Length: 433
Image (spheres, rainbow, N blue to C red):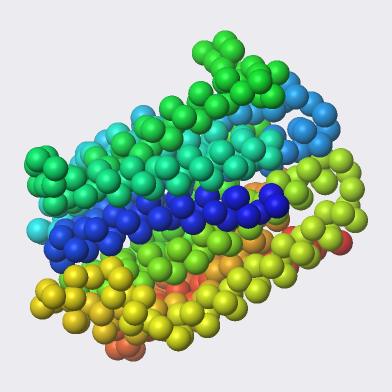
């Protein structure tokens, strides 16, 4: 029961990005390509800072396993401190994102729209990271239902604001990609307010006194969150960098190909979020058993989590192979002339995406298991080698020197993900045995 709300909230979180892509895709090709670049760039910066939030989950679960409630409060507060500080520091990256994208070889018109989008969403980094910390805190306390319902409410708000501001409905200005950016910030702020009120006001949680004397630093706890969280963030950067590099290289091939690539990645990411939710549940269970010192239960829980993730991956493969065109068509206005090319290319990429469903699920599950035993430094290096020294070079060589184009680029992703899955799973079972 712990895993289902986390899976649901992960899917709902991903639905925020999917709705942006779908609704901007209805608006136009160039804005869609810009939002694909802007959203993926935001995610790369976000995922580094989210390492501190993700570190809170196993630390709180392990502290509860030891019966140390004071440590629960200390770790969560310093996770918030580090996340807020990081969110402020990275705002200039978004403000001057246009020249960065041009230097990386992207189309000038797409880069200009992407910069407009990123200048707005950049100010949402602080609330986005704070929300992630509170979600980790509440999930470790088994308060996963509220995480799910708040995220679902955010999806509804995101759709409504997108409809109003992207297309200029309800008497509001037509803002295109910038409208999607304002919708994103609105959902982040709403989620933060609701979760703060819940964590502060719920009688069962008041004993943790989470926000009491929040302004006071706790340097030992901050060092612990930093020590565990920074490698988690850098591991996410290594994986996210693999997909961001693929988006940049696809941009070298063409705008239609980039738009199709963005849609196929959104679909693959949607199924990936199933594994993210299962991985988070596994982290909580493993950390709790680790805090209690129960190694037998720890290994049993890990085996069950891996088996469930494998089954979910098999279902995803079947879906991608059965109806790829129908899935891609959901993201497009088929009346527009450019949609036919995007549909055909996106469907071909989605068939290739089926190849890495198993590897993608296994690598994120392995990372969740390793975080449960607070092992993050070695996994960081394993991920970096798999993605940056193997995956990205393989994508480039297959796409350009060997001439396989976008399909070759995606085959390179498969290679990197399989290397990560194998090495990370080996690391976990070696540790626990």
